Amino acid sequence: VIEKHFTLDRTLPGPDHAASLEPEELKAMVASIRNIEKAMGNGMKKPSPSESKNIPITRKSIVAVKLIKIGEIFTEGPLDGLVNNAAGNFISRTQDLSHRGFEAIASIVFHGTFYVTHSVGKRWIELEKGGSILSILATWVWTGSAFTVPSAMSKSGINAMTKSLATEWGHAGIRLNAIAPGPFPTEGAWARLSPNQDPNDTSGQGAYSENPMGRVGKMEELGNLATFLMSDGCDYLTGQTIAIDGGEYLTGGTFYRALASMKDEDWDAIKATIKATNEKDKAKRTV
Image (cartoon, rainbow, N blue to C red; front, top):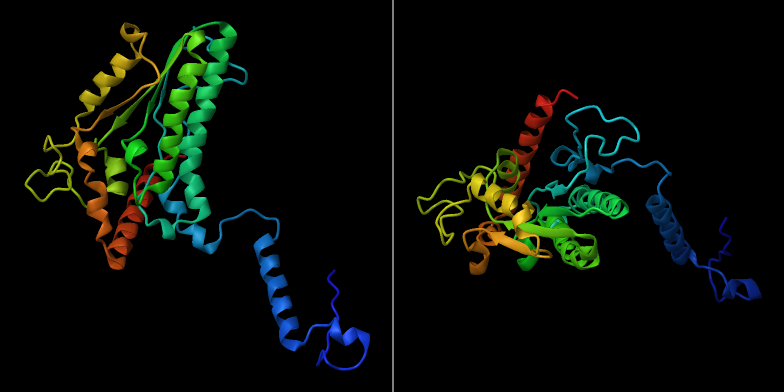
């Protein structure tokens, strides 16, 4: 309950008038109270109208290849390696993002990666067993990335985690390294980060034709580096993030230049394309 005296004229005689609000002041106070009530909400957590548009382009998921029973931990032999490759991303002007849109990315890329790393590392320390942890990042950890700010922030945090835990857990025989790939096209990522672009176009018009090597990466190249970093042959290597991008980030990259000049109608078209891609993917799911 808020109590406030009201008067038509504060200069009227009597002690209460001087401490009272005049009509316009009372109106402003009531409006402020109503705004606070709206900000507090009704106690129910649900997307606001401005947040609902981000739901089709973000999702959280974790999939197991077999049934996992409650309390089941490494029952078929100890785990000795972890690859953090969870990702969620889409291009957007940062002013168009909602808080829930940001959290949808950060909860997967940043929070999820730390939670799994923490759980596995803690278990290894309890068992007095070493292991290797590899995280897949992006060259944005060094340059930042306009139009994908939630992902760039989250991956930069995992880069810091990699360096920090490499020193903290090194005594336990736990190694942490990371790979920062450049453009390695996949159907899902390309549809959300480079809509309507052919990643293999090196005719001079393609987005990645200016890469020093004139092409995108091959998955086997990324796999070869990951295999090396996870292998027993480099046990002394830890705390490192290695770029594999054809030298692109050393030139300043092409991602920003491709997006910075776009107009409102271009962004509207991209949103529509990304939404259609997500709806198509959603229709393929069985659960």
